[in-house]
Image 1 (cartoon, rainbow, N blue to C red):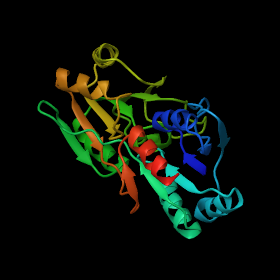
Image 2 (cartoon, helix red, strand yellow):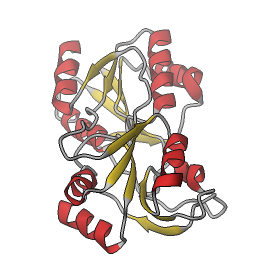
Image 3 (tube, rainbow, N blue to C red):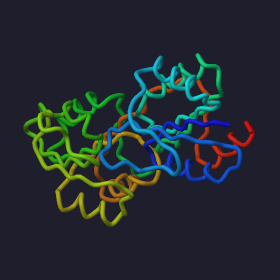
Image 4 (cartoon, helix red, strand yellow):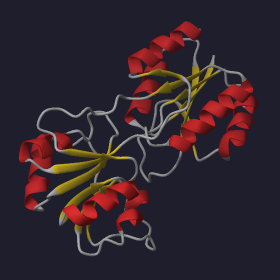
Length: 245
C-alpha cells in the first residue's frame, strides 16, 4: 500500500516513524517547505507544494498513491481543503490527523476571536506589551499598531521586506517549559498573549504560564475543516491504516 502523508508537524514526523515499521506500507511524507529547518520525517519525503487540488490529484494518480493522511497544522486550512478535494477526485481513502484544540479551564483569561485581524482589533485598545505567537506570516495584521511593543516568537525570521510591528523578534522552536515561559513573560513585562489555538503540548506552557500570572490571552480559533474522517492522535491514525491493509 502506498501512503502519502501531508506533514510538517511533530505528529506527522511521529506517524512517519511508526509507519516505517509496518510491513506492507510504502510511505512518502510531503513537507510544504515553509520552514527553513523542518522536522524531517523518517523514510521517503518530498518538499514543496503541488499546485493546488488539481496538482495534488495529479500527483496521487502519477505516484499510484492508495491512501492519503493529512497531518498538517490545524491552521493549514487551504492545504487540508486541497487534500480532501484531491482524495475525493482520485477516489482514495483520506484521513485527517488533527490534535485536539486547547480547552479553556478555570483561571484562564481568554478572549476568543475568529482571525488574526480580529485579534489585532482586540489588543489595539487593551494591551501595551504583547507576546505575539501567531507565526511570521501573520505579522502584517499587527504592523499598524505602533503604540504597542511586541515580542514576536517564530521558528524562522520574517522576510526582509515584511510588514512587522514594533518590538523584538525571537526565533525559537518548542517544546518550551513552564519555567522558560514564565520567565519570558515576566522579564518582558507582557500583559497580553496572542496565540492560535494550535493544540498539543509543544507550546501549551505559555498558556499555563499566562494562567498562573493572570495574563490575558487573545486566542484565535481554528478555521473550519473539510468533511472527512478524523482521528486525534498518531496511534489512532496507525490503527486506521492497519485496517486498510
